[in-house]
Image (cartoon, rainbow, N blue to C red):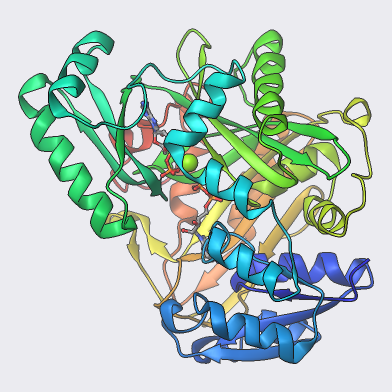
Length: 451
Ligand code: ADP
Ligand code: ADP
Ligand code: MG
């Protein structure tokens, strides 16, 4: 087993990895930007090294600085967390060639799955249903028009290198197809340096259901059931839950099997998520693989009892998973609310600044994964997520009641947070009956007060 791990991240996920390391008797090394010098991840790690100034591009994204920090600290492995360099195959390769294990899949698997069009072909090869669309990248606009007519409008133009909700455009009709294709291509070149785009049918009012998987280097591939992440605003997830509130058992088995086939066919080791959209008839279609740990992994941990970060570390160290598929069950219901420093009454505008005082909720079934404290200043430079409130109870009804009381207990003074939005959605009839689709929040929420 490793003796020392460097965490190439900040915020709550850095704490999450530090906690896993400490329980395993592994030393943790934090890296931080000058803006994060007083952060909890710096205080809680066994050692911390400054890697640059505030802007991510000058610190958390600086590959050479992070590798240099790993050398100075003498670590065995590097955990990338999520965001930042987590899906950067070049960083992955650099870690390995510098003598550090990268806690994640191989650079080859990461590169193939990270390219959405390639991943789509891999899904087809594994008999995993994909959204009807173009056969590969769009080479010629005239052919694209014929494809769009065949699959039917509206169509979604997707950048093969896209991510984080960026690089997607809808074309409602043939008149706008070519202009939207051109716009999407230019946007993709500017954002990702890769102009490759493809077409998918735009599925009306889908739900987003994803499957947590983890594979080791001994040929074991397991799933940890599904998460429903349909509560999204502009393609960004806000609430996630396990199990899905509305998925027949045979469909649940089929979607989990499809995710396992996808990963088993990709020569993949580590944790990953296979994302699908699901239509009103419970047909599911593969959309992408996230070859890393995800923000919402705790809900799967709660319903299965598996520590996903510790399993990631085991797998990277060459050990087999500590469980077999037939030992896993999905117990009770778990919900996660992302607490962001944003003002939900003002279009979710960022609300960085000093937290004058705060109180974190507790009690039966409550978990709060966060790096913030009274007196902490939320810097304006990074993602606005300041914590994740997670509950786990025997039923969904109890989980909702527990979440509502935990949201009431959570006190954060000095900045605005997404708590009022969560109080609204958790009382909303569509959420209660499990019928929320991925555009529901965009249609129904205009900053109203909790019911
Ligand atoms: P990203 O890499 O940005 O996460 P995804 O391909 O995972 O991109 O899509 C993000 C979200 O966009 C999905 O969760 C879903 O809400 C929506 N979406 C993706 N593909 C489709 C589609 N073909 N039809 C309708 N909505 C889609
Ligand atoms: P997705 O939305 O692509 O399915 P996640 O829900 O796991 O995946 O979100 C990951 C994204 O969240 C990252 O790509 C990044 O944009 C953002 N993010 C949130 N918090 C952080 C953080 N502390 N550090 C870096 N990125 C973060
Ligand atoms: Mg996605």
